[in-house]
Every structure is written in C-alpha cells, then in structure tokens.
Image 1 (tube, rainbow, N blue to C red):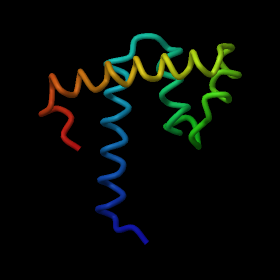
Image 2: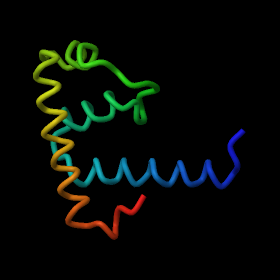
Image 3: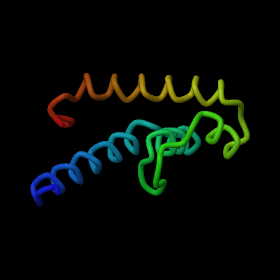
Image 4: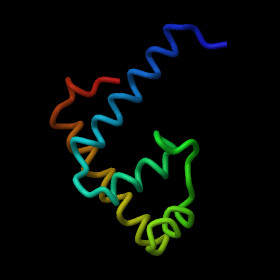
Length: 87
C-alpha cells in the first residue's frame, strides 16, 4: 500500500513530465507517440511501436525514429533547465 505522500509525489512527477512534453514537443503526432509509448494520460497503458504505428498510420520504424528524436529534445530541455525539472 502506497502512502499519501508517495501518491502525491508520483502525481507531481507525472504533472512535471506532462508539462515537459507540452512545452517541448510542438507536433501533436510526436506528443501522442510519447504519451502512447509510455502509457501517460489519456492512455492507460504503454503501447508497442507497432500499435502506435498502426494508430498513426506510419511504420513502427518511423515511430521509433520520432520517439528517439523527441526524447532527445526533452533531455536537452532538461539539461538547460535542470532546476525546473528536479524529480
């Protein structure tokens, strides 16, 4: 059983991740790739490359490429603004 503090902390981290995605990723398609791949709201579970590709009408290799590029942008933003993204 998780404590209230653990749940609040987890919720806070989730909000920061979603904020990071919103501020960093401009294309809706790329946002959806990250949200789907990691099972972030509104998605209930992580999706495979194939599932994401089928949903977006692209190959799973293209999904992988876009995911990699988007995660790189997110990492760069975190590096530049470390104090804003302390998890």
